[in-house]
Image (tube, rainbow, N blue to C red; front, side):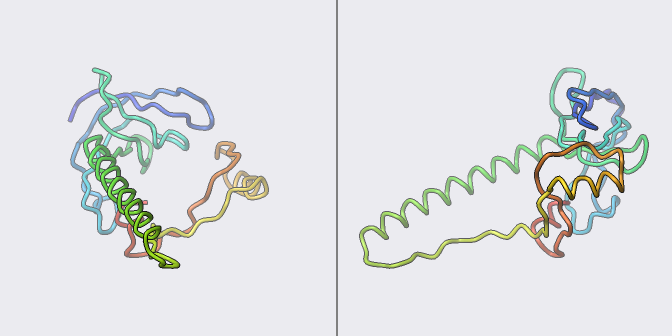
Length: 171
């Protein structure tokens, strides 16, 4: 708490936008923010985070990334996911990916050696319902919210399915 920070991002399609702030706490419980089943503590800062700024780094004055800008509740109250949590997530994901890749390679070799027609493929379910962002959808969204940045593609999350990895992850 009390540390000066810099939030970097591209809000409203303005690249390399920098805002500054101070860390209020490094342990704001996700449940306090209304995120059910959250076991994560967020970094609370008064650095301004707007559309397009989320996903960018929150950096201390030593240039160290301490978090990833995530959400804004109101003017002067924004939150970031701590960098150590992101590092653990990436390491776990890489480890799982490596193990799954090795398993698939073994399965492929075994399939070549046997006459089996198919092998079971593990499917993953994130738990979001989404639609593709088209030019028509973008025009409709901009009509409802003129401050929305111009986006040429991607997906829009319509719903987070209860009791799924997406909900547990705070999407």
